[in-house]
Length: 367
Image (cartoon, rainbow, N blue to C red):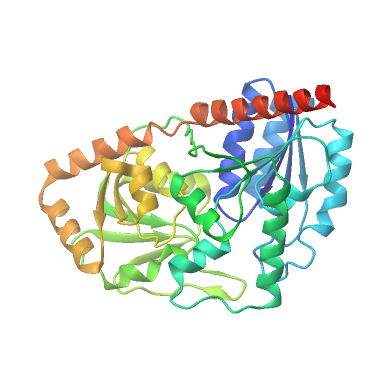
């Protein structure tokens, strides 16, 4: 099976497509991975180069510096890359197009098109803003791009039931809609001595991450925050009281920090899945999560939950004084994290692609 997967280089979509690409290559598929947004950084390009050396002609990587549909400059988010995508689909004789942006579901091709909805602007705004978004040209273009992509796709996938239902509040979805949780596979690493510290990571400039919340927390445990402080016109507070702001870290360094920490705090007010807490739990951290429906769906009883700064402060004080409670929390988070594997995610997507190809063949035979 030849699959073209679109990705972007800015957030967790890259990590998701990196994992899925690896899993599908291991399953014998041929993959064309096409990225948009900013050009790949050194670490992303290195991963692609390593994959090309490992998999040879079964893997191709193409990068474009093109604005994404959710960005303010989204006038050409579809039209600029569409011709290049069509060329790649024809050149590599692609069987399935897997879109990690909504707009490419509208590609005028006969092959099955699958959209994975990692997030969307409308559900983000409902979670992060008290007021509705202004009815601007940008927002109208965004709605049009998403609507067109979903209308022409054969299937839409979301990593949680919550995200699928949230997307459906703003847009009409294809009949074939599924939940396939994200999966993550981390390399083995030597055991490290841990410090009684709590870490949080992500795009700190994104209102959804709610990182400023930590500045109101009173904690006997050291609090660390990792991530980009600004992007475009958005920025996070440069300082958060006693919280140590570490800035962005390379993936390997971030995983090292997770392995040296006892706790991970997920402060997000909007989190359709959350790869960073999953990585932290796989590295041995106990997960403390803001009590929102999507995080309850993902972590169930594998996390400890808080509702505000006072309840998180109290939770941190309890964990500081009760090592047995901390050990139990770490064990529960680890067990839940193990359910989100690359193998399980890949198997689910592979089955979906097979079903859509079979459906296409049946339609062609009837015609």
